[in-house]
Length: 622
Image (cartoon, rainbow, N blue to C red; front, side, top):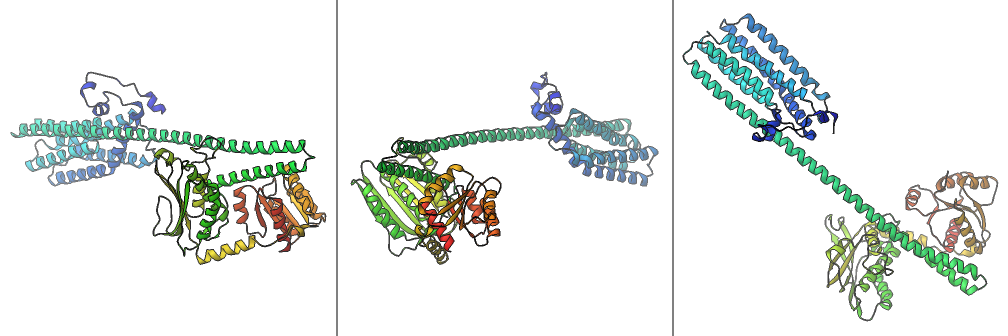
């Protein structure tokens, strides 16, 4: 609340307060407005007057000039009228000064009562000037001059009421001065029709006053209604913001809890297996079994990471050509042994379907997750239908978000328990699941949705309690250009390379994490390659400058000081053509590295030692 509003007197109740409309009572100062609105109502009143000032002053000066010209032609011009014209001009200039300075005011700044009193004073001065005209020129003038002055005075009463209508005190002061001057002039005249004119002028003035106060009340009531509406909107937006924040925090808590639960399980498996290996180091078979368990836990952690990134639309996908017929047949062969005999699996795959473009490994994971959900929804048996069809979207649609184009539409339909509206609305939220604890992570549908959208398609779910669920997945159809590009990438990835050729190769391994360095050394040593280690980019460059034999640089992306890309540039400046492999565990690093335009192999952590060996052999022999 502004300091100005805090100085406003508290609302007061009087005899008249309860008998007048609130807006009118506030305008006349009988009761004060709420501190929140009072200053702004006054600001709107003054602003209304200032907006009309140019027109009013131009009309006033023009009417004054016409008056002087007419009285001059009738030889009724007196020194007093000349002085009057100078005062009128001075008042017009004062209004013009206030109007010019209006842009310097903050339109939302509250206005004090002083500004309203100043407007009332201007009304008195302005009305006094025009009220003096009948006193000076009406008595004793010819009838045509009296008629002219009467019309001019009436016109100025209407104009003043219109201009000063937003501030009724100023408007009433102006009308009272002008009408008072006219009535006094009529009383001084001996014309027999003057009494009738006095009555007419009185009635005319009352009508103008009533109209002025009514419009002024509407002005304030309208302002108050807008202010209350704005306050309600602000309150609603604040409430919506608080609710959205609470929902974000709840989602974050659920996300963090789900991640912690799954990764704690993984860490428990890794830690327990490591301790068992240490206690049973002499039992080769048991060590191999426990090592496989650790590797399985690591792969499970990588899968959770990829699902989270797919949900966030930030996973890196390797698009390739996928034959939908072969895809669904492979899915059927994979699913059949895992389904109970009470569940029938039906394929609906017409011949002649075009290929689709997607990351095959991610797509396989999506199909496994969706069919597993369908299986769990039919504990007492039912039918599972896998269908594929070509779908052409003529124009962009919002739900699901699909751009115009050609797609392959994959549907997984079950006749299970289905979902109600509340469950369906949350079905794709991460870590939301209706399955018992330990039966699901709640990432399957969220990962599927993220994968579809990142692939350029969409996912939609339709479900009816007791009648089953249908999940529809749209994936872009491959055209000739993308087909050729994807096949080229697949051939490059599948190029043969044997780990046996890694023997006697010199690897410069650069990573700022000691645990990662030690683990990679242990995993690469059995392949017969020679490894030099550096904990940062500068140490690696010192080794190269010192003449250390290096066939390939294997570097982490994010390191203190110089990152992996800058290290590769600096190393190749010293040894042109040096093979390089960049490792990263962050998808943002992948995007930066792919956009860099450098000739190196980009691999994503975690990676098996055999895959790393294959990649650096291929890089050296390229």
